Length: 131
Length: 147
Image (tube, rainbow over all chains, first blue to last red; front, side, top):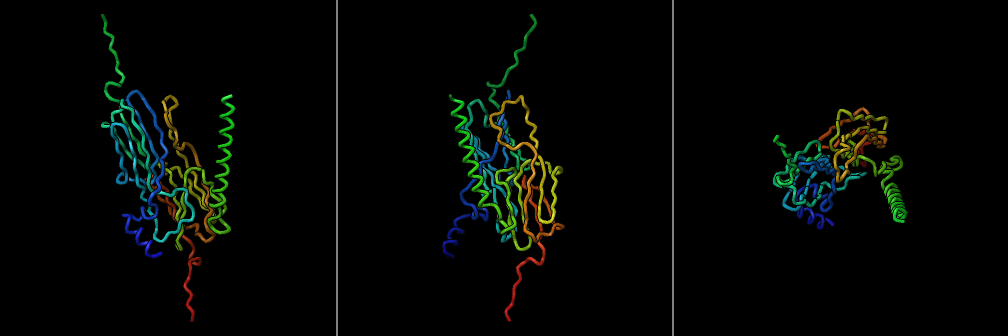
């Protein structure tokens, strides 16, 4: 028993991963669209800026966050709704969205991500000239 | 015909959900032997509870809370946490997904009998509310030396 425990310990990097190596949580999101782009808000409680990785390429958006939970040593879990410390979720992007211009911010565990529509998909106001 | 089939389907689904909840409750209720009644497992926000001989740690995973509006009380060993999260969604906005919790919540957690209601600390960091409740001296395990 002791041997196998040490084996698993050596395989992983952080104490959090040691406890929960595989599972991840699918964060809850709100997504809405307006004329100029799309906004996504995701609940990522426990995630700091440093633990958050957002990748946007032409077709996909992926969110990967690691929660840092301050736990005393030798704590015994007696009840857990949350059984992983990693959040992961991906979305496909339609090509009218400009992933290069995406902007993100994180506040109290809420991620706000804004992806604007490409120039040619932005609404244009047509000026009516007096003749 | 279609709506009926749908109705039946969702009824059945609800029934599964109910069963699942009951199973969950069966296994999660009473995490303090005998005293811990239950924590409704499907209510917002999700919580984790851990113990050491010195203290009980309670974690609420609730991002984007206004910590000023939290109302935390402890009465003997009953911990009550009231709060709200208002997202202020605009009805005129075109939402594709609305999964995030919007509204008030009230969470009740039964703690072990030996907690000291006067020694409670609360911190709200990165969307996690962390409460630490100290346990009374007398309840710590003591080493008994055999003479």
